[in-house]
Figure 1: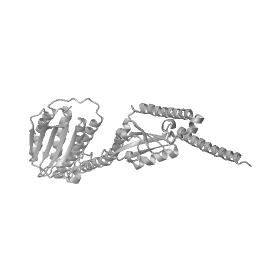
Figure 2: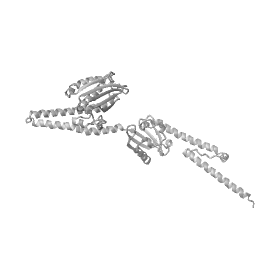
Figure 3: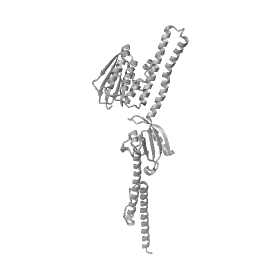
Figure 4: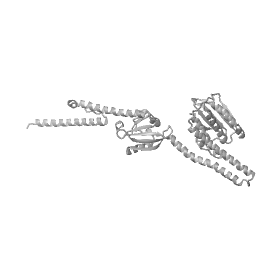
Length: 414
């Protein structure tokens, strides 16, 4: 029997296998191109040209590119819509890549434009936020209040809400988050708790003293000696003064924090306030054997609101007289720097311990010496509020060789 038919049959079988494998490569490539936009390793060879597969390749590539362009356009439209929002918006895809961050989110997390497309985990620097992403993927939506550690930026509290987002723009498993910064609200809540704690104590103490001595005078006035009457009346007057100081301080802070009045910036306001307030405190300074000196430089005198400037100087001098134990001199000094107009109030008292100096501008915070002197812990807090109202800053350092120096800087742009 001739072997030629068998040879032809064998060659035909080999050819069919070759064609089958070529078609399998084509199908696999088409699947990758359509589902993953992966056009690598495109099949080639004489068989591709013979069967006219080149046209099919081009059609698949054109369709995939069109879908990619549609997806990109959808993502771009979403980005444009979110850009004006003051709340931060982030989109994280199924691979934990940061796909979108509006300007507010970039500022909140300190994200650069070239970091889009990178893993979001090292960018947000928050284990709580990472956990929230996992919850949103699992549950479809979730929200939480999160503390963001943003070193070197200041830490921030945010209210974060997440949900699944459009898969056409960002792929399956992508999630979107809206983050509203609530740092100020958290601070106010903490201040409210501190206010209730401190005011309840600070108001209760003088009121209890007032009631005790007043009831004693009312019940036993006839049998009390003149000396006891005088002593009791002085205690009542002292407690009333303490209450008045506390209430005035609280009203001043409330006025500063809720004020919507326009600031009346006036050249020379700080120098004028220094002269006027120094004259007001002259009698008290003489009684305390403290010399109050003005070292006002040859400058514009400070551009500030006159009412707030007086409040600033009053609280600075009062703080020095009340709490600078052993002081014999208080110096008010002004000069101009690159940062703006600077006012320094320096005493030669006992100074403040390093553990206290970073907190003396906090509301109701009092050093041990202030507690013994009956301070309310509001004076320097008012100083800080006035400085910030002018866009300025405050600071404190221990003077050399002794004493405390308070520095207030107000921008020259006022």
